[in-house]
Length: 168
Image (cartoon, rainbow, N blue to C red):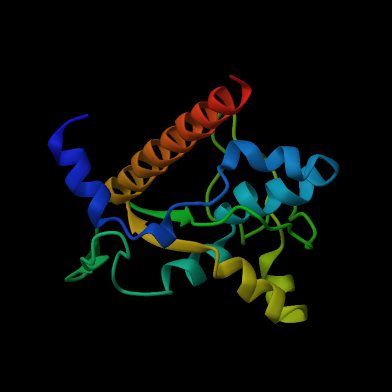
């Protein structure tokens, strides 16, 4: 790894690094895959959810810099899950709903939950969903996941070393 990466690693607050990686969550929710994907992927394309996540703060929590400069936002602000452990309890929006923030891309999960309805009928649960996602700069989002990879690689090595030492 280069030195810049390690400087970035020290700057990223650890609470932004997911404690359970996204790829491991489907094993936890194997009987609730649709509800999990609605939260983890579908909600990100819901206009109400998108706007509420972006209004959580004016600064990127990864770097501390403003998300908005002057009248324009940074070229790309992403929504980062610091936790993927959540199920959506809402219904699926029709494909032509005005609440769909953007169209589905190639291999993306195609469904979008009705976050507007959930926010109105189950506001505490909805707030719980919002609390698991932060707006960050696209570049910072990449750094967060680089740190995540390094930390989980280290954990894998530690576990493997412990296994080898106890079975020897």
